[in-house]
Length: 225
Image (cartoon, rainbow, N blue to C red; front, side, top):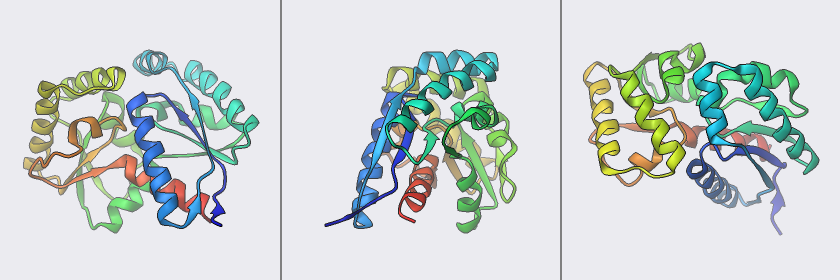
C-alpha cells in the first residue's frame, strides 16, 4: 500500500489547459515516488484573472483567491499554490489573507536555474511576468524579456484563455524564443503555465525549461516530505 502525500490544494482554471497538465504531472510524479497523491483543485476564472492582472487590481484578485483558498482548506488541503505565474502578481496580498500556507511557483525557479548552471535565461510570458523578471524574484540568474513583449503577452493571453495554440501563435512564440537565444540567453524559460501548448512535442532548436515542471517538482517535494 502506498503512503499518501500531504494534501495539496491548487487554485486552477487559470487557464484550464495548464490545470490539466498540473494534474497529470502531479499524478505521475507522485507515482514515480511510490506515493498516493492527495489533491484538491479549486476552479478560478481565467477571464477575471486576466482583467485584474491587466488593471493591476491586486486587492480584487487576492479577494477572489481567498474564496478558493477557503474552499481548499475546507476540503482538507494542508498547503496551497496558484497554477499561474501571471497570477502571482498579487502573491503578497493573497498570502496575507490565505488560511493556508501559500507556496510560490517563482521561488523554486531561481534555485533551479542556478542548479543547472544557467547564467542568463530568456523569459516567455505575460508583460507583467517577463517584463518584471518574475516580479524581481530572480537573484542568481540574469533574465531577458522578449524584444516584442507586447506581442508575446497578447499571444500568450489568447492561448491561455482559449486553451488552444494555433500554428501562427506557435510560430510567434518559438521565433521570439530564438531571438532571446540570439541575445545571449542560455535557455528559454516558459514563464507561463499554458506555454506548453506551444512547445510540448516540438523541438525549437534551443534549450527550453518549463516553469510548470519546476513548480510541480517543488510541490511534490513538499507533499512527500
